[in-house]
Image 1: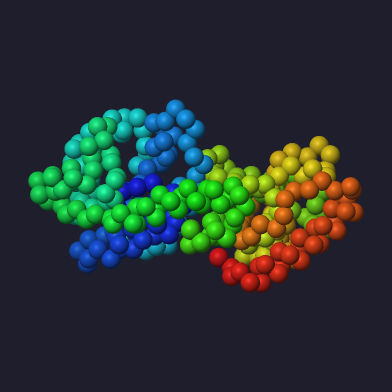
Image 2: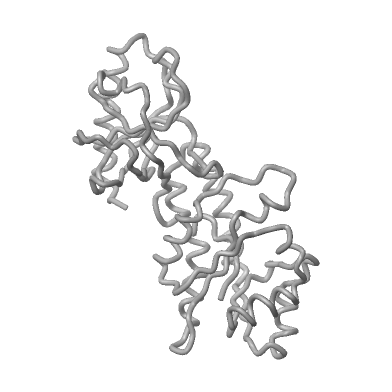
Length: 294
């Protein structure tokens, strides 16, 4: 077993999960123990950082790494008040039959914050489980990666985010009705409503993307922003999927960010906007021809 939030399940996390898998033998199963919502959201008075993955996304990414089970525990104030010893005895040993825990040198749990590597080693023989330390450089890579990914997405550096994640950053949303102006411009868009308010949305701009839905996986371009050329427009997340003419309302579409193309601009009129959209389409197709599907 390993414990953590595993937000984004990026390359640092993947190293931990690979180690967990490697240590699992024929008599045992690999388990990730994680929390929802993020502990900082419950315990901190300050706004918690936006999440790189929703719970659903996190579970899918952990499963993709070949882990047998993920245990999701609702993080509450009551849980945070459980002592480290009670947490180990009542949850990890009695309920989950812990055989071996793989944990970082700096990981702490329990209301007294005494649940660390040393504590686990001191009670391991009493409760009959093994303790393995995750090397410091794995932990450092994990911490650095999360911050770098958030910064990269804020600064339009999609490729850097991909490098740290080991996969494209993505968001998913239900297709809702917008102004439907894209149709009249020759560029119909799916207007996405992202359900999870805590999910990190990349900074405003135009992006080359892969889009996935009932139509399969297709290339496209995405606009995030206020559509300054359109009078009365509000902030929106819209994707134009190339060579697709289907009604997608109420369906879920997932968008994978490949590369940033340009900032939002205010054009002199719709003709100038259409000219720019043609250039954006050409740029997106060129980029996506050199970047594989997710």
